[in-house]
Amino acid sequence: MRAETRHQLKQDRFSKVTLEAAEKTANWTVEHQSKLIAAVIAVVVIGAIAFGGWYYVNTQDEKASAELSTAVRTFETPVRPAGMPPQPGYDTFASPGERATAARKQFQAIVDKYPHTHTADLARYFVGLASAQLNDNAAAERSLQEATGSSNGDLAALGKFALASVYRGENKDAQAVDLYKQLIDKPTIVVSKATAQLELAGFYESRQKPDEAKKIYDQVEKENPATEAALLAQRRATAVKQ
Image (cartoon, rainbow, N blue to C red; front, side, top):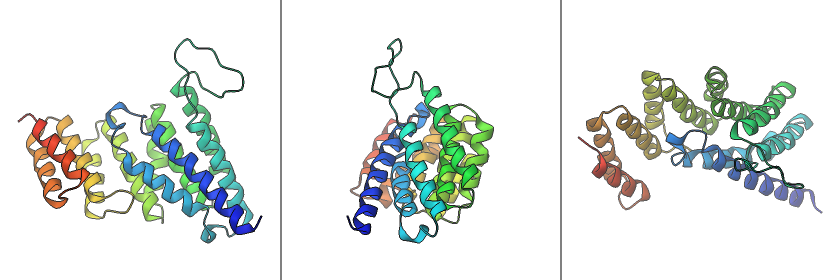
């Protein structure tokens, strides 16, 4: 098998696993489980970059990428229904917390073993997500703040998006709003302006600020005619209680 073909198959497998993991990751907080579409896209994009030729500068990054694929599979392993025993030959976890604990350990190992690789940057982001699932907000903040400082603009945006959610859970409203506004002012492929706007509007709704929320929904609808974002904004604006 030619080297390019092997490389493409490896990238495709990684992207599939990463996409599924990101979908599971969207459940790390009930408040945001339907909103992290950007996270799904971002992880796939960054995963593809991690396996691209630009980052294969040494064997360390290649090894880190392989281990990241394993850790991501752990992160998206199914959780058994309560009371169901493990089934032979079928990997599952007893709870989301058990899964997040196992995955975080694997992601952190990548950071520790390959700290200067690009793959470790992505692993730090996942450490932050796993920590958030475990309600370890201090660890989540540390890892996601590192992600926000990444030289990779997509990863930095994704880190800000996730960190804003952590701040919301901690009632650090000013910090959350600031991050959303940064994403609105400087959108990326992985976190579009409309995505950040809808998230900020949802935040205002949760804080009983319907006027601010509706203003943003109206703006999204006006700026994105005939799109899913516009339809979603329209539905939410109609439902806003003023």
